[in-house]
Image 1 (cartoon, rainbow, N blue to C red):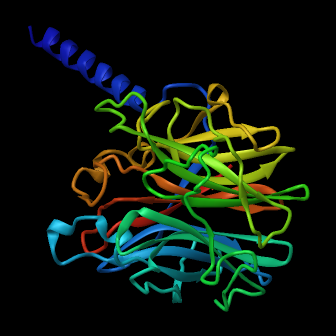
Image 2 (cartoon, rainbow, N blue to C red):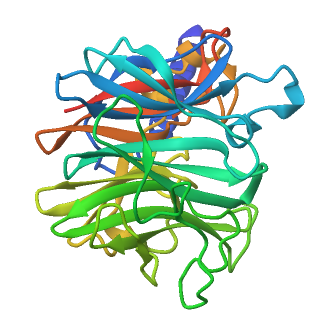
Length: 360
């Protein structure tokens, strides 16, 4: 009898293990990423998306979203659109450690509220920092900013083709454009130079045509705005560039092997859990077919083990650790490191943290 009970327990453990694996791996394609560790965490603060760039001396700079952990627990994680600022960190290596230097873009409240989700590129001998702000904590008024500089000393100036404060994109008034009815503004930019054209990708959220409990009545998609000048102005392309049915956010764009590639968050878990990400590719960057999209990476628990996170403090998502805001460090034209944010932390004195992966 004891023998049969032992056999039954063993079978149950194997089934449980298989189910746990299948929670993550729903197809056989994935990026080959290796977990390194935490890139940035800060006592008493939430740290979110970290965007990397290498300077002329080989040092790695991170532009990071951060805001204080609220003393009022009812505020929960909403500080990202109320109190956020963009911080500048520097390390001698891509894997860190990173040292805080200064706040590069401060929260001015009012019309320039809570700068968030920075992404930085070096294009045409210019550093270009794009990010989002809103007005008075109103997410329907999110817009995209573009700053430029000759160096990384945070001497940022608004791009020449932007509005006076650096605003480059807003929700368009033109009814012929796909995101004219966007309910959460335009947000989460990523920039690319492709041949002689500059492509500023952005997220817009539309009311879903078929609202369900799973999609929360929202449709997350990406579009692109085009310019023949780095500093704009940029004109929104009429159609969305990601196929409908696969929802995404937090995209990062880069060029490799004559293809335009996107890495994004798998917002609704179309190809796995919603804690992981997607890899998209396109021949020209004007349309990314959902059918050829595959899983890019998994949630944090997949790499560090569920046991290590079971007692972690959860600020956003769940104990598996959603990995959001993927930003890549490309060296000699190829992605070598990926920085992602997660809303769990096994050290309770810290808030959400930035993590770094090698891309093999």
